[in-house]
Length: 425
Image (cartoon, rainbow, N blue to C red):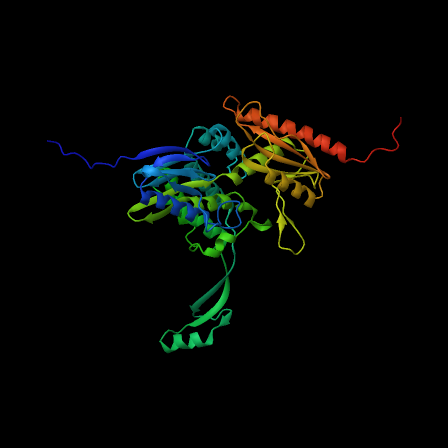
């Protein structure tokens, strides 16, 4: 009789939509593990585009109901979570082809056709993200790593920098003929390089990612052999004028470190997350699409400090110098104004001394019902919608949105120009 192989556990898979509540049958330990995973993710300030952590919140909400059932929702994330023998696949809140199009247009997506193809094929976005990160890391290695001066404290035979006398005396007394020196050394062991290496090591050790991508990640990490381990302070590193070559790989590495392979345990239940935060990704993709279609107007994300109050205004979209401002909400817009959203864009416009403000959101129907244009004081506000309907291709939605915004900006420019007093009657 031929021996049977090991019996593999049956994995129960649940399909969920981000930010939408689903009622599932979960044990208490499974629910606690999901909450712990969500808190671990929310506490990470390294999530791309975020500046503060949320230690008391969770991106995964679990509420107990009767009969062992729980209401579960994943807040603004997509990807896969495994808890014991259960697997939760979290899909975008808009049709996947529209999500894929916007994500592939973001600044973090590689600038070649494979980026969109990989997403359009319906691959797990977290796995595609890992591939993008390895692609960007390999490109960085080809262009060359940046080096910088780093502080070193080391026992050496020839004196360099500042000698630490007490420590040196102890070394000599113990029979080690060296001087302990505090000096600076020009090295590749910088915060940016440590982030890239840590991300590649995370990818190489994540079993869910395909073997080829993990092997490439290991090769990148091996080539970064002179770079040390990640430090907590490294996660505050940002790209500046001298480190522009890291502008793609840094946000990708941050996303990998914050969302891929996070593991927690609750009792006997082990949970592992492969999640990617979506709002900043979609915002960035939408801004890139608008900028590509409106070449005569600079569209940027800006920050305006309000004196020495410590407060700042941070609109997602500033058109021109301050011709108009806009904010992106990754959700379906209702027919009526959401007061906090309206207050926010009017405040942004006032801070930037602009008379025009816009709210950008999504519609799941081909004929969206949007909030009516409104005027508050000196500020005119209106809403725009990306049509994410099943029968509408994302390229068509992009073209329609760009055309609507172009017409709006034309009216705004005309209204903001002073009248010509010398024109003939």
